[in-house]
Image 1 (cartoon, helix red, strand yellow):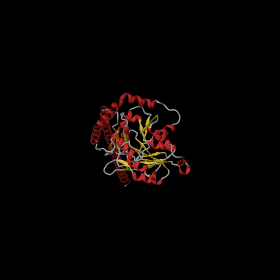
Image 2: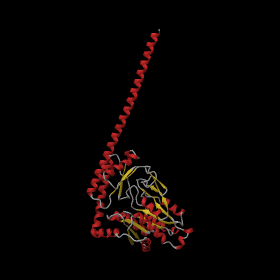
Image 3: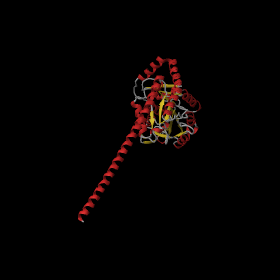
Image 4: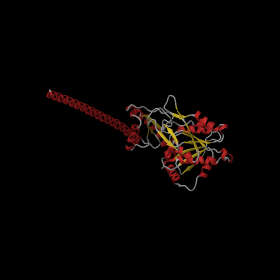
Length: 385
């Protein structure tokens, strides 16, 4: 394989790769009547990839996902992908699939998508894989290797900060084709900072191959412990884990007992104020506008996901002490949330009782006044007699 390190984050690297693929098309494909200006994107609710397609001056067609039977997983809808390939035949520049994502979304079936792109009727359709933080997961790396063997893969884009613990600002672009990598290098405009490359180089020299492998092994050791503790906290407050066995980095628990809507979002803010970063709290029914398109159920990568939920990742670089501290703060956030809810309920009940008492007192005063008036009327009548 071949590769290049870009001084750009993952989203801008996706845009650059798409521009390189368009630039590498035969001259006949760049005529107005035959222009390939459409990208099919298997929906994943992370804004950068969608905005990358628009930044490249292309039309993004969002391919809906589906909820798997027997689990909580949200995954590729291959039938919808195939239908869109037929509908936009001759206009599709590339398909973008994703292997690293937040639960309940699981990695796309990139091997099946690679087979679709390799079909004769889909000739000329490139396949770009957003592998942002997937290098740390052996399962998804094997899935990509299989996709390269059984079908078409043009580019694999990985983030340097998420996989190698360096500062934000760099990405790796890998490809089975040397021409793709050369084209990516050619379309980069102007000069670039060497900082991301130097950061990666120094970090790799510092940790060495054995050091990096040790980090990967430590992550795998912590995964089982992480899931167990996450499930324990969820069960303590009447929730359950999301069943997403094909996502081995990001894990989720339901938040159905919090009340939904603004209450669920408030729980997310409680975590943030307790310096818990990296978690995602997603209430049901969120809507988001991006590039003029409305995304229903935003955050869950599908329409009508049945649960509000919280996700957290067991990623490379996580230490056991940090993990323990995270679960301690998560437990305290749950405890504080329900304590505040209880106080809020008690206050509402007190206010209601006060209103009822005031209403009863007003009624009693009115009744007393009416009795006094009747008594006065009787006295006046006696005097007149």
